[in-house]
Image 1 (cartoon, rainbow, N blue to C red):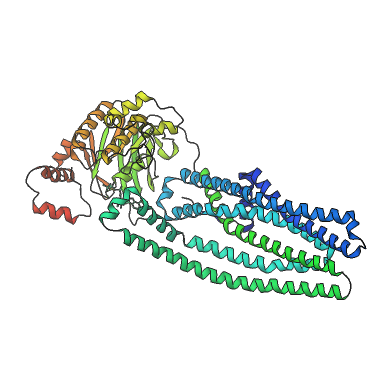
Image 2 (cartoon, protein in one colour):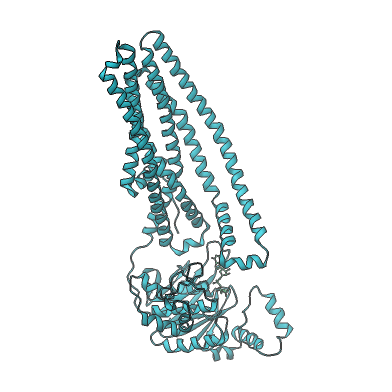
Length: 613
Ligand SMILES: Nc1ncnc2c1ncn2[C@@H]1O[C@H](COP(=O)(O)OP(=O)(O)OP(=O)(O)O)[C@@H](O)[C@H]1O
């Protein structure tokens, strides 16, 4: 489990600058140069303009003054350069922003991909990832703020130099005008960040609703239950809540910014009074006073630009820091482990486990062992802990107490990749071709899929015929949301998922409800295949179908996170305990006569019951 420490504002801003500079070095430098050229060009044009006006007023015959024409020419060239650099900077900035967004999203997705699966059980993790993803928008702000800040600083240096030449006494006044803006910007950005931070659960719920409303998979149920209006209403409520919070924030920002603006106005009044005093005491000429006034105004706008860039940067920098720290923690949490090697025996010793959000243990004192080559079935009513146990045996979660060992070594200390093949109830349906869906693990490991092995896995899983009938056979993309693609029924998808496990050829195969969506023929064929594949392989099968379960070497019966019975089918039937009772309930449902009312009442009174075959 990880917690995200906070880092200081200035360090966070440093990281944000580093991110932008690293991401698109060439574009970054070009944008800063162009922005600076435009800022410095303005300062230079001002100085040249002031000199030109002075020569016109001082000269007897200005039309013959070649230096005057040179100065005017310089101003015209500078005007062209300024216009070009502003236009080019806009285009370059667009590319820079896209690159920063790309790098940011890549970082966020890498973080999500490397995070321990345990973190996915915690709302805090989802809040953090949501904020990080929202930060993709902030990355555009950063990519704008950083060059603007640097260009603002460079341009201000030029303008300050110009002012130092024309009216140095105004320098402290102009610099002071930035202070109220900086203070207001700092407070505003802090409040904005904490608003976004606190609003993350609202945002997540809103995005989840957007997903439901726009998803193909969910569109049928939404319509059958007439949920559209209600879901939209809930979405609007959440959005209104956000906007109400934002409105309060903006009112506070406006109040604060007004006070800061009064501060800026006061410093400008001081500047005007100072200029008037310089003029009336003949310390400067009218022309110099005019140039100084324009320089002061331009400097004022540069100072505002710097202050708002710092505020933008500060607001998004904390998100950069959040992501960077999370990434760093994730990397630390994934050391290279030695390969586990093919399974010889798997043991669970007094294992307890509790989900972070749960009030009680999902597993409680599990003692259990499997030898290579065994076929184990796990049964039990809904919520009894079957999937959780399977996930722990696959090394996905660590026990809270007790241990799980693979060939005598704790599972968390060995690399099980390639040794475990599992499909869970919510197996993945990738928008890949049928071949890629089956050979997904091998492709991910950088291997070129073997067509013959893909076909063999598909045949063993009963998927070959259905794939052959697709428009492009094994090369068909398995989604109708892409042109030329095709979709499959749930049972057909389940066969593809089983083929994915078989292609992997692992030493431990975990199938969580593998036949839930299979028809009777497919189920019988699958089990005949599994029998054939047993050589050197260990199977753990979770199922509610007793027709599936009874052929297993050993059946483990779970109830409320505990193993209450285990043995072969005939042993458990002879025991006449929970297994025998559940078996009888299901066997009765196959008969023509409906179950007796006592059983129905019993079944209905339980929180969860075995589903029908
Ligand atoms: N992510 C979770 N957070 C909190 N509690 C959970 C979570 N997942 C499962 N549980 C709880 O843990 C217990 C065991 O769940 P598990 O999914 O292992 O049951 P199961 O026997 O596989 O059920 P089913 O037959 O419905 O698939 C249940 O009480 C369930 O509510």
